[in-house]
Amino acid sequence: MQPSNRNTATESQTRIIIMEKQSYCSDFSRDQIDQYDEFLDEIYDEICVGGLTFSPSDVIFNCDPLAYRIGLDEYIDEQNDE
Image: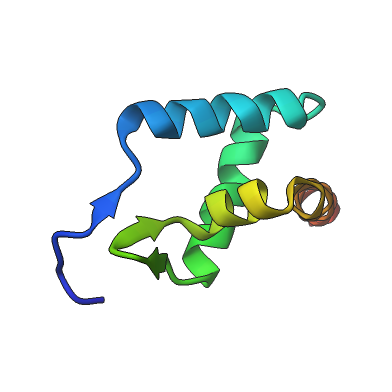
């Protein structure tokens, strides 16, 4: 990845996204959500649009929260099976 001066989400924007994820996925712990986000962010590249950079986990959550929740549920089930 090239170093750049692209804008990334501010700390307050990140907190809002985390609060929304916890609210929408209230039957999952914060650790489970964080682990799933780390998993998504490791396997997919950052998304850059119009000079802004977004994490894959935030893009999936904000574009399709239901798909994010289903993926989170499947991820946790796989982790519990191991």
